[in-house]
Length: 116
Image (cartoon, rainbow, N blue to C red):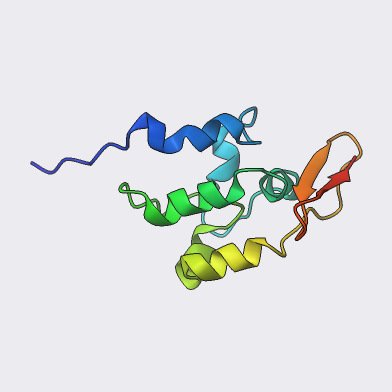
C-alpha cells in the first residue's frame, strides 16, 4: 500500500501570512490552457510569503504539479528551476493595479511600494 507522506502543519506556518486567504482555492487551479485572472495573479505578486509558497510547490513531499503557487503556473514551474523561479518573482510586480485593492510589495531595498 502506498502512502502519501503528510507534511507537518508547522512546515506551512507561512500560510498564516498569505495574501490569498480570502480567495477561493479554485481561483488557483484552472483548467489546462487557461490562466488565472490578473487580479488573482496580482494578489500573488504582492504577497509577503510568495517565496515560501513557491518553495512549497517545488519542495513539497506531495509533489505539487498543478495550480498556481507563488504566482507561477504549473508550466512555468516545469520550465524553471527553483532558483530561476525565485529570480523571476523578484521582477514580477503588480500590473495594472485595481483602485479597490491595496497592494503592498517590497522593492529591492526592502522598502514597501504601495499601490492603492
